[in-house]
Image (cartoon, rainbow, N blue to C red; front, side, top):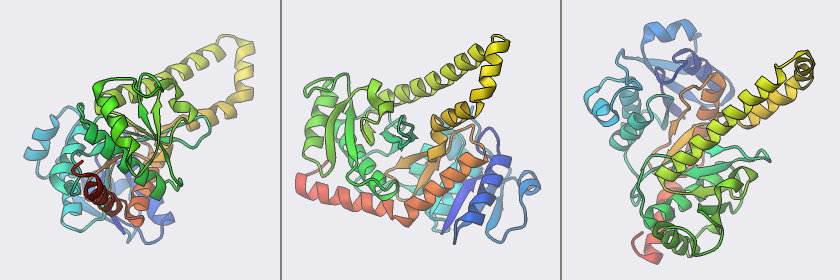
Amino acid sequence: MKLAIDAMGGDHAPEAVVKGALKAVSSIEGLEISLIGDEEKINPYLNKSNKISVIHTTEVITADDEPVRAVRRKKQASMVLMAKEVKEGRADGCISAGNTGALMSAGLFGVGRLKGVERPALSPTLPTEDGKGFLMLDVGANVDAKPSHLLQYAIIGSIYCEKVRGISSPRVGLLNVGTEEGKGSELTKKAFELMTGAPINFIGNVESRDLLNGAADVVVTDGFTGNVALKTIEGTALTMFSMIKSTFMKNIKSKIAAGLVKNDLKKLKNQLDYSEYGGAGLFGLSAPVIKAHGSSNERAIFNAIKQACNMVEQNVSETIESTLKEEQKEGGEL
């Protein structure tokens, strides 16, 4: 198995990317990695390993670049060359912690969509109270959506959770303003009808307040709503920890208490860190494409690599394509 990784993407690149890759090839049997980026910046962190090769380029897509324009104009950018490795069959999947919009464009133009997929979905696994986590899609690949898109997201998410996360008959919920049938917009009402007859374990509507309680294994929504929900969850977690830290630092007594619960707080912080589950998969493409968090450290990169490896081993892309094909045969065009 071989993965291509954008070594220059992310806040801590290339150090975190290289160290995460080294950890992965030393612990995942049969894995080879191509790092794409500036050799002069990569080599100081790269120990000699016959399992890691470097494709040299100095061109990079930055966070300030306009995604589509950058992918089309910067032909030698590390992210573009990464997608090219997959397209031309030299890699089975790819990972980047760089510009999200550019990665979506590189994935679409470079790797390509699966047959039958109308729109890919950006899908992270988010934390839950019980530590099992849930998959949310879409969180921003497409701002607008049709009911048929949400149906495809539900099927794709169900396949991923079953094949990669090992969840038997994953519970699929539709994010809505209420749990009752008939609630919501015309989009969610129509999507509800379609999902009811789909080959998934559809449990109906779920509300945002119940997401972290583990109300469903897969939560489906449009990209606009999903992105707002994702950033609300992330922002709330960061704010809560800032408030807790401030409370513990108020006086000598509270500082002593902080010392006593330090390890427990660290465990809680890790439990709320969704990078522990890997990156956000760009599902619906012909090969695994993983968007790691922009602030990824080496552990987060390692987890994203494990996620991509699992997707390759379990033939997730092929299973999504064949399942959608069967659904179209039985129910007509999605």
